[in-house]
Length: 217
Image 1 (cartoon, helix red, strand yellow):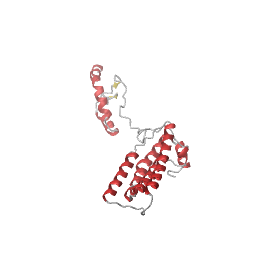
Image 2: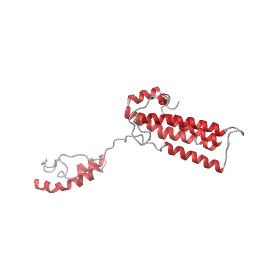
Image 3: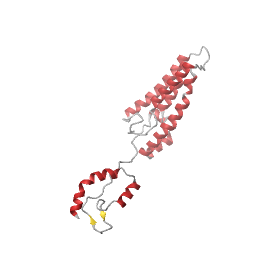
Image 4: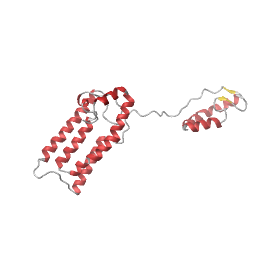
């Protein structure tokens, strides 16, 4: 019997690889159906203890969630695409919304600059705290000081303000309208996933920050 087990030993790596690809239900069925000479335990037909093989180890891939928010889109890419789409639509069918003589360039430039400064301050705080800005990377710490003491998402608030500034500067209702899809994608495809990730990673510390500071303003 021992000689037979020794002969089957070289097959163990291949069986391990095969077993790791199965679902839990398939593994159970496989364990019940394959001869006990391969699965450590006791042969039901002979009652012989199968102790010659090493203990079984489950080599299935790790199913733990990724250490990032897993957002649906990268916000800067979304912002650029939507503003470009609005500009393209305005080029085909202009929809101005400001009265004649309005200093659109100056006012719009000022509004855009305000959004840019707000987002820039938030990014600088992230870097000083040693955590990543990119949504597809892990977060090292909760930043709750500076602009983050007034908003949990100052970068996204700055992006919304920047869109308003561009719309005013170009006097384009189309660009202003891109705020609608931008908000909904950011709110439900990015922020909701970031909040769930931060709650999972930081627990009570993030929940306390969440209760203290508003999502937007």
